[in-house]
Length: 352
Image 1 (cartoon, helix red, strand yellow):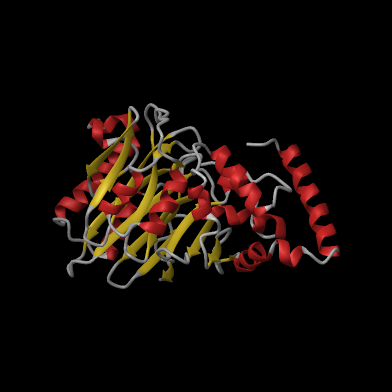
Image 2 (cartoon, rainbow, N blue to C red):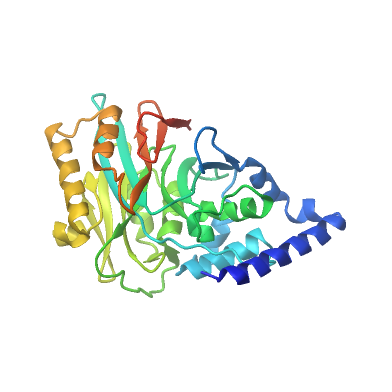
């Protein structure tokens, strides 16, 4: 992260340059695409520090892929700085590592249901609706803190709304219109070994964006990821929980430079490939075992309500690490329900 003093200087420079551009009558042309997105950034009524943003395109993501992607958050930042600010100021992105829970199942109509808790130490959620020109529409969640480095900085003014555009590239989780569900979970053991082959590069969060845009099934997701070198975001280890409309559900794990696919309907914060539930700490083990017991007791058939109940049982309401948001997706209704700060009686619903 840049020091705050340096970022303020750069933002101040950007304000001056933008003001001069406006005076010259060119801002509407230079920032036409960005201004359209900025207009969509708004707080969600009744939810403190929760925001919504909408894009009717992929905001240069295909260009990002064509240029070889990125092997670090810094390279993602450099690409976005050029796109969003035209090089006038720095856009920083990172992923500091969620501690989370995921469960996937089928309902009694053979439809896919899925749930996810995102646990962290303060977040500013931005729900991003993206409709690419050539890809699947998706609803994803970004933590604006991963862009600004502060849970106190909100996308309420023009500059911060411009920064919020970077949210498209740093989703923590998401669901697309084909029913593919993806979530990033921290792995509290070791580190992701650096890989450097002839394949193009992606960070964990840009890999999630790729899958939401292009993959309809777990099989397609695995094939897509196999075409890239996947790198850690935020300097920590990750794995990806991926499931689809058929009920197929896997953990994509990165061990010793290799991508390993593990079939599983429940996931927390340790690599299942190692079979060591203690590696993620006591909380990760307890949450995993509870989710598995619910899944097994119901023989893999759960309603959306039962998914929500399971999430509430493994949510964290005390201590430094708390559940920032929960998501319940139901294929039958094409509904994505969000719950914030462990308040499972107050959903915010989105439809594709």
